[in-house]
Length: 264
Image (cartoon, rainbow, N blue to C red; front, side, top):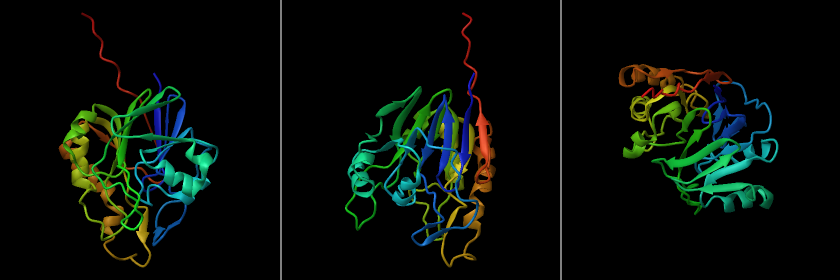
């Protein structure tokens, strides 16, 4: 039976390896992002070119063109439907030709790994000034394990249909003191999401990485505490799940659940 591993590189940037395929999620590989700076953890050190990059939505802290230029190789870019034109404008036609556009419910395969786009309750546009609109996505990755990468999302009714899962990568916070919980999960809501999707393992992400310049002493509990708070709420709401609060650059390896035998 194979293994699945995930390395957290801060915010929503993760290196996911399953069934011989490597996936990179929403890469932010720089130390600055507009008014935000990397306030904890080392810069990401990727082991090589990924087979594919999963891009959940067009917000700049998830769909960061400068970081995409830094990714080695020519990986597939799995993006929300309607995003390829933005890739072509920002990265060139050759990058757009590597795009696989998906809507919720659609899927693609990379090697032996199936990647299904699923709903995310979150605005997907680049920003009110850009005119760029695309639906936000999460992804369910099925190889030797079933992994849900939520992207950015609030709670939604269909979430219960995503499980059961081996691993859930769940956003639990944000990047600044003014980020409202609406259409983002806070630690308690993230624990409720974990309960709904019935994941055996969970890793909190989307917190403790970037913070607005000049806000170093403002509401620090919103920076480093969402991960541990999520683990505390999860122990109450989803006691069968094993939560691992990773340090940036740390890796979790999980094995899929053993299949249920039918001896009848």
